[in-house]
Image (cartoon, rainbow, N blue to C red; front, side):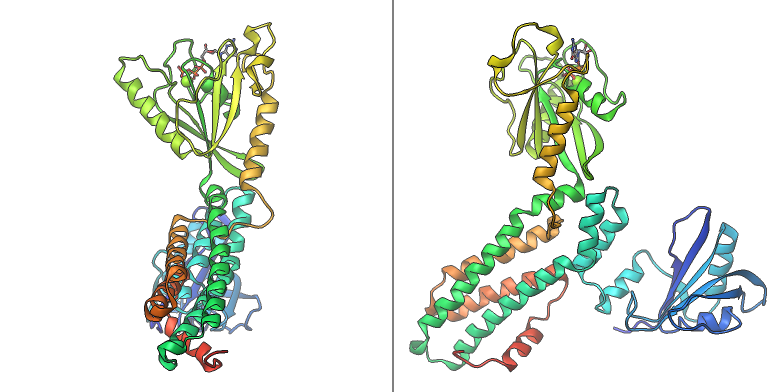
Length: 442
Ligand SMILES: Nc1nc2c(ncn2[C@@H]2O[C@H](COP(=O)(O)OP(=O)(O)OP(=O)(O)O)[C@@H](O)[C@H]2O)c(=O)[nH]1
Ligand SMILES: [Mg+2]
């Protein structure tokens, strides 16, 4: 789709800054140089130019001007960049001057990226990566988002899609050219083996998706335990400020309180919760305890806290996350705590064991969510698409070679699902390409 309008906008952040970059994209982008600058610029080289209002002739600023010719640009269209001084009046004067040009208008939110997508410069997963990169706050988030924005995930998804479609091509060809009784069972078995191999590879990455979503959304660590054991005290220590109220009255915390921190470059959301107890008439506390259970269900790691003198009986919440046992207030006892079994022994009061607690948390988070290679799957949307795709392949694997048409249909759905993942739905195009160098039975 060719856009007829040329769009422009401030691409750097709002607020006073040394430099502001205004980006122009569209079929007439280069006209902005003709109209606003006295002399043209060389492609992909920064040139210093006076920038003027083309109607009044007034010089608005002096700055660097660059142009990039389509199609190898961010949007796939001609692009111009004006690097001007970052003051508010300068920015608005240049934006006004651009707005006066015929067929030019301010870009809508995300419109440059939308054009990049329509022109095939970025696929959906790369755009998601780019969005994450702009929001990245920690180094692990940056690393993961950059890999995805640069197409690391898309490369794998596209390979899987090609593999599926080449399997589809085999079965479609068999339907078209082979009599039912002539179906080559050995060749079918070979294709089935390929499907099994593929679905296992996909499932491996799907299992690894918690790593991706954890880094993107934050790893969830939830503090759980009976009232008054020192959960809020631990949270305040971790946050290094008084986030939660601490008091000697059991049932102090009634709501879930969240603090985001960073451990080894990975964002971690700590949640302090209402202490768990059976006996309470307080409605608000009861609501709080409900929330504790909900948060525990979603937790990646549960910090199960007791205080010295108590035992780890049974964890009173359901969780699929790792559980780290912590005994607090060890300053209160002189007897040995060994009989209680393996647990971190700390005292928020004296500071004993707190560095070990932090190290254990760091290690656990890195172990679960770190790793050298960034995860392929980082969002719920990607997760769902991949698990649907696996579902279709599984159905195809179970099917009988006697019903090749039904089997093909499942494989086709699997391919469409992966296409949706990256934002491409052209199964037929790819099928044609594969058919071109494809002989039945080979
Ligand atoms: N002696 C001692 N007291 C502590 C320690 N840590 C916390 N306390 C005290 O224990 C009491 C309860 O602490 P909180 O942090 O409010 O406990 P909690 O688990 O959040 O309690 P709820 O919010 O009621 O569930 C407070 O009086 C704290 O000062 C510790 O290591 N040693
Ligand atoms: Mg508390």
